[in-house]
Length: 277
Image 1 (tube, rainbow, N blue to C red):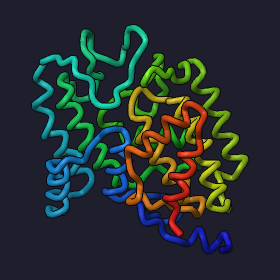
Image 2: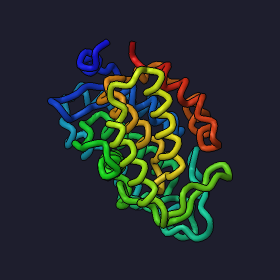
Image 3: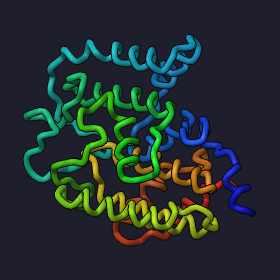
Image 4: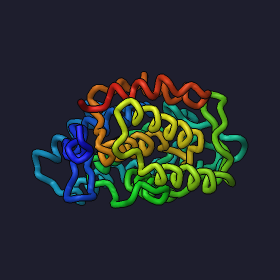
């Protein structure tokens, strides 16, 4: 199929507004979030549905979410529970409240369950708002992370300054993040961000890109959601839109983990299976 015709196919997992603004649909971002263990619960869905029925604007929705959790910020109970998929840090972590595993956040929530609920709801709302404009560069990638997490963390969109690991696997040292990330994105730009590639080649190359970006893990938290949101936008712009309703979150998580250890074949196969035909 000619490239021009491929690029005209509207992605089912989202839509373009004008020429350069992309919006994910609610269920697609819910599946992306589930890869990081963040579930769109029945309660969360009901809140979003209430917003729909009331016809609230994006600004009004975000205000209502903030008000819903603001009262909890007065509670100073400290919990050592770590949310599903949380990062391990080596030594003192300035991103956490002293003596706690809870990440410092804009609402001052000290209870992990409250923070998890707030983050799930506010990022779900941000996830269905137009993504930032950009040229798929590292700066654009950081802008996507900032877009999703700006209501939760002051450091949204900023590279982390601490060492982190997951499952015993250390991610890129903080002092090397910028250099490695820019090198990776410059290489992607040289390859025209995978435009006009056959489906199987797009899947192989995008899996290699995601594996490297995951190993860099630029942010203190929320890397998985930023990673897969970027992939969805990359695929849509490349004329290979993804059908995220077919994505199995746990399979995607396992494939990303395997790619860290050098086996990119499962990730490439999953991406190829998601490409709309």
